[in-house]
Image (cartoon, rainbow, N blue to C red):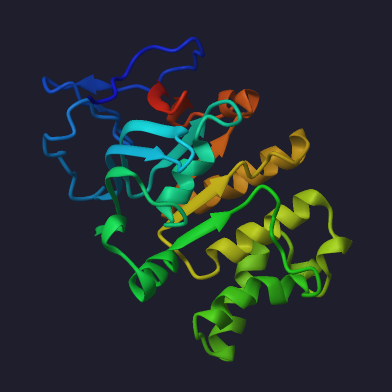
Length: 269
C-alpha cells in the first residue's frame, strides 16, 4: 500500500508549474511525492536526484509505527520544508536520512547509496557528506566558536592550513566572524544556532538537514536562520528543514510536505 497525495486542511500559496503525470506522480520541478514508487523517476540532467524514499516504514520495538509508506524524491538544489505536529515523525525522518535510525522496510537512497546496505566506515563516509543542524545546538561548551566549527574538519583529517582557509569565510557567512573567540555561553540562542549551522556546512556537504532549527528562537532570530539556510541553498546545498512553525513556512515560497500520523502528503508544491 502506497501513500497518496491528498489535500490537507493547511493551505499555503501554490507554486506555479505543477504537472501530474499519468502514473499519479506529482512533479514540482523540485521535490516530488510519488504514489507509484515502482515506476522509474524521470531525472533532469541538471537536477539529479539526491534523496529517494520508496515505501519506507519505521516501526519501533515497542510496536509504535512512526512512519508509514513514505515515498519522497528530493533533487539536488531543492529547499524543502517538512511540517507536522510534535511527535508526527519529522525527526525520525531526518534520523533515517543520516543513518542514526534504520527503516523497518523500504529503501532510502542518499547521494546514490542505499542506507540499508551501509555499515561502519561506509556509513561514516556518507555522513561526512551530510550537514546536520539540531534544535538544541549541541555545541561543545568549553570550546570557542572557532574551535566548535573547526572540530568537524579536524575530525575528518583536514590540515591546519585547510581548516584556517575554510573557517573565516564560513563564520563570515553566518555573521559571526567577530565572535570567533567567544564561548557558547557568551552567545545568544540565535548566535549559537548560527554557530551550529557554520559547523554543519564548513565541510561543504551537498545535503543539509535542519531539525527544528528555529524551535528555541524568537521571530527575528528564526527569520535570520532561515535566510542563512536560503543563502546556503542558493550556493547549491540541498536543504531539508523540519518545523512546526506554520507562520515561518507561510512567509516562504518553498515546497512543503506534511507528516501526520506517520504519513506524508504535499501541502505546497
